[in-house]
Length: 334
Image (cartoon, rainbow, N blue to C red; front, top):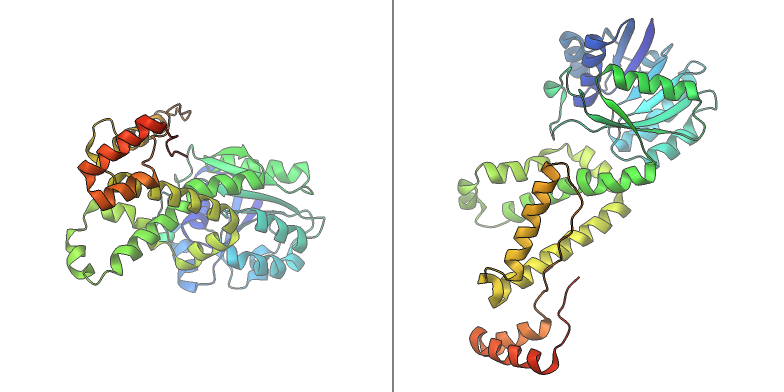
């Protein structure tokens, strides 16, 4: 019988346990969590066969050890368990950032241990063991990133576990993984947090909040992510997130310019075109077609804005249009 130890029994850890117990054969699942009540709940829910109250006991004799814990705690836990692993044990994780984790694994584990990084692309933005389900990973992509020292048997063991819980293994480079996750996994957390803070910090928030309906709740849901998890993600993937934040700031700046310009009301103006482009991008994404061929709308120039500020929109447009006809300057666009 194969023994799998799960360290961390939140949404992902408990869901892996439930999936293994529901779908895998001849598997014993041992669980450990720093919170006693979480361990007890996992045992009660059937996510684990038994709980261990000491970390070394949890990994002792385990064929596979799964770390489903926040990134900031990973390095210390790797160091703590390394002396207690059996020879040829397989180690994997579920962190949503990988470059640092892969480095910590290389520094912490002996050559006899095979580390294979992992990230189940599932969860639906929810947190906590209370939301764990046995079918959470069914048909979901599961990123797999073997370390350079991982033997083939270790990779096969992790792939078998991934398939056993119903997911689809997807091999990817750690750097490529972190780049993609920054854009579609981590940036939404930052945007959700920014929206929450921008509105909640308003002196009028008490009144504003009365108007907050499902749209606002949906957009700010990720602001409710465990702060330790969010901070760990942001700090461990900071360089990638800085890039994508700059892209978002650029998009917002463009929108700001468009709305400040008189062309905002034009049915074929840059503001309308921007919303058409985003609508089309979303529809293509929903249909599984991600290649885009639209041209970004031209933005009003800084000169246009200054003229309109001093002369008013109508008169400013006359001067602006006349200048364009005379000089045909290149329009601003990214």
